[in-house]
Image (cartoon, rainbow, N blue to C red; front, side):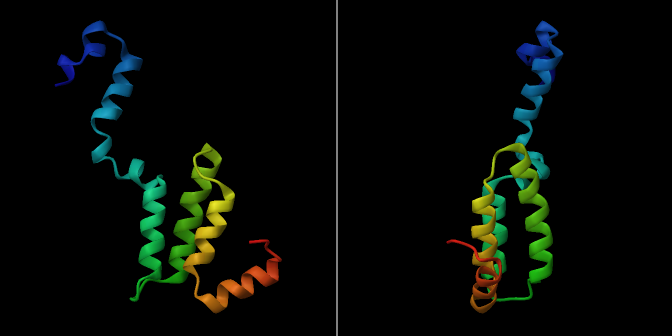
Length: 103
């Protein structure tokens, strides 16, 4: 398959790199991890009843969303909005009041 790609035949290695990334994107879990849909699924899992740990959610969510913000593909406002929505209602109200957030 690789030898049949246009970039390979032209010996354009930079273009080949991008074509390979695109061709195998679906198989790369790390690529999916840094998407809004992944964070939304993480958010939904947190809100569903079960054994999901709030601490684990916050650590995971913060690490992934921070990288996405640094890359410019996620807004800080959305980061705060989603994490507040994942918290239990009484806790999110306390956070909003404590930090004097303007919703």
